[in-house]
Every structure is written in C-alpha cells, then in structure tokens.
Image (tube, rainbow, N blue to C red; front, side, top):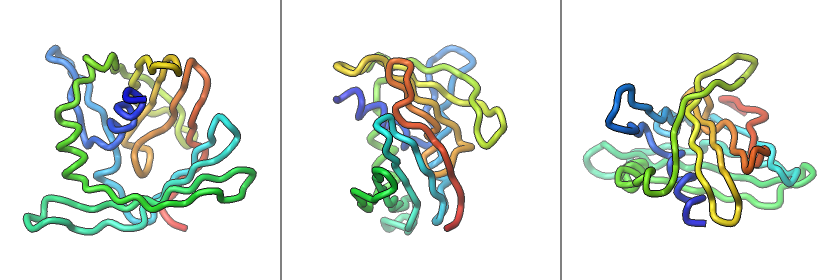
Length: 170
C-alpha cells in the first residue's frame, strides 16, 4: 500500500518537474489554486461515490507562505452518505514532503495524454506504476480539474475512480 499512498500524495503537489532531459514533464496539480466552494464527485468501481469539496482556506504560519486547506470528503453508497470527514492540509507541509519523493525509485512513470473533461479534450499528465497486490495503476491529472486536479484512476485498465461532476458553488 506504500506505493498507492505515494501515488495519492503526488496529487497534492503544485508542480513536479520530471527528468533531466528536455522537455521536462510537469505535473499540473490544482490544490494550490483551489477556491472555497469548489467540488468534485467521483464514481467508484464498487458503485459508490466520493465527493470532495473545499470548505475552508486560511493562512497559516507567521511568514504568510502557507495555507491550511480543508476538504470535506464524503462517501456515498446508493445515494446515502456512509462516511464524512473534514481533512485539513498544510500546503507547505505537503510540498515539503513531496519535494523529496523519488518517483523513479517508486517505479512510477510520467507521460502526457489527452482526456475528455466537460465535453472538451484537455491535456493530462499520466502517472503509471505497479502497485503491489493491486496491479497497474494509471492516474490522469490536469490543472483544469477542480480541487486536486484528479480526473481518473484506473487499476489494470479498469476505472477505479472517475470524475463524473464538478463545480464551483453549491
């Protein structure tokens, strides 16, 4: 599960530059640009739904270079909420933690791709890796997708988590 958490942690980066060769691939992630009220709804492979909404962003620390971002995460089964929790992230802590991530050592590869979002084709960064006990994981991300930038996660070519709706208000 360490590799799965590594892949999930990458979603919170502002930008990661990959490789020493030109052109470098940057992961365009959205959390640092998130605004209160933005929300996403994902369909899960088990038939459930996962919703995430930015409920609070406030300054943190004395230097003004950090923000505390609170996401409300809800899990639904057959339209009934079965879990809800508010999770608060320090953007500076996430960036510091992920600066030292070694994607090569983790077996993760990055590439560019295209995907459909709100009826338009957008550029995405694709992270691919082997996850022990689960198979091949492919995650598609773009800074065009609200909240964290996550568009879809596939496991062994099948959708595991897929964006079905998003917005910037209630």
